[in-house]
Image (tube, rainbow, N blue to C red):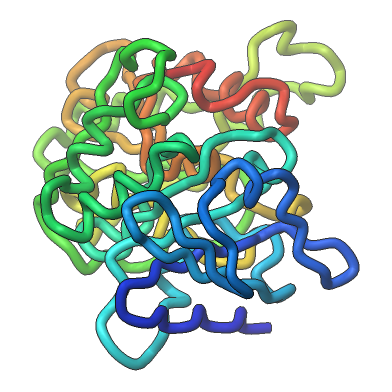
Length: 300
């Protein structure tokens, strides 16, 4: 069933979208209290004068920031950003997720609730660019957070646009993005396990090691795909029993390095954030993300 489109915000407003519901009722948790500001009906006016328009619909339950570009209002220009009250915000008390809807639609950065008004006002005025939010993230995906710098900074460059949707379904998707190093690509494919030859993980034959068993996408249509562009390409409507766990990019560095360090992209906590993970550890990463045993930031 198609998901309902997002409403078009009024001039000077930014949508605050809830994606957590129980019995059809929005669960905001402590998100609205943490924002402070002045509440009037369905709007919250933050310090700096930015108005947040509360947006609720049970059809958005469990959607992620990368899903928003496909659901933008059909009429009028796309909003600059959307603020997302997702499950980490509602249940974990995390910072709100600010989702880019214009420059690289679908990528996101978490911004402290008490700093949100200023950041949104600076984005609207042009005093701040979304690229600067991404470049200012700590390893937890928080703008100007205190978690320390990520080992692999998230790229902000865009080489080209207009990519097709990625395949639907569960598990991990491995996407080739470099088409100059054929030998490196063959070597990477050769290092993937053969499911017909490997044992059953439930029998304990793998020990502590988990092989990566991805859906492989080898299509020049994805040449030069950048991490921030990935979340919007995963089909919306993911659910706990059938969702894409992670997307790994086989870029030039992954093909040239004997360790095959894949550029893995966060789809949920901070859409578009990256971690550089050697191929022989990527299966363990996928398994731990699948069962929520570790967060993406643990690998960052």
